Image 1: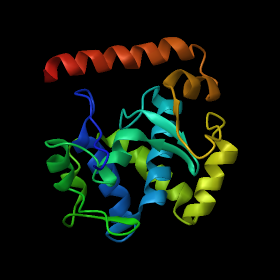
Image 2 (image 1 turned 90 degrees about the vertical axis):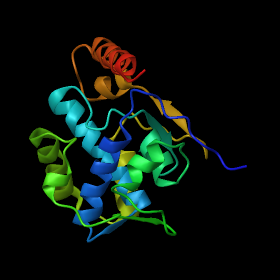
Image 3 (image 1 turned 60 degrees about the horizontal axis):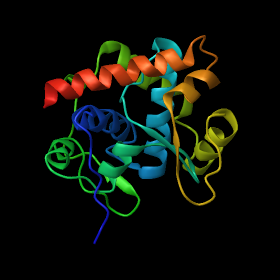
Image 4 (image 1 turned 120 degrees about the vertical axis):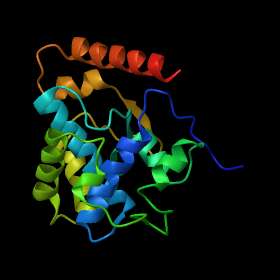
Length: 191
């Protein structure tokens, strides 16, 4: 039986799909999964550095090819339960080999879950890394994202406090606790 991720109520599959769609659109309509996972993580990390919260709000794990957004990756792999898979499918088509395509052409207006500030961070991430090949991008995250540790062929969690600490934020634990409190609030409204 295939693995199916149970996605928590605080996680927005629509928001993650729109972030993925942004990068797939920049790549011409489909994007390599490894490349997408790195760009999405780097966007979240840049947002945490600048605004003290991630774009997607996803959990992070260290995997052999670098940091990964947990639930977004599960959605890319078709390993999530409805209704998240249906929401994801509004923007992203089924994975084919190592690529995820757009479900349909998009415009910036279709990305209604993302603020102008989110889009600016995604654009900056794209501009910084658009010419870097997927394996080089993975290697870049190994060298320049010190929160990543080699998981020895598995995966290990990367908590928000660790990311904030590596970004030299003054109160990393307090910032992480604030993000967790916001998740509880979002989940209470989703119940």
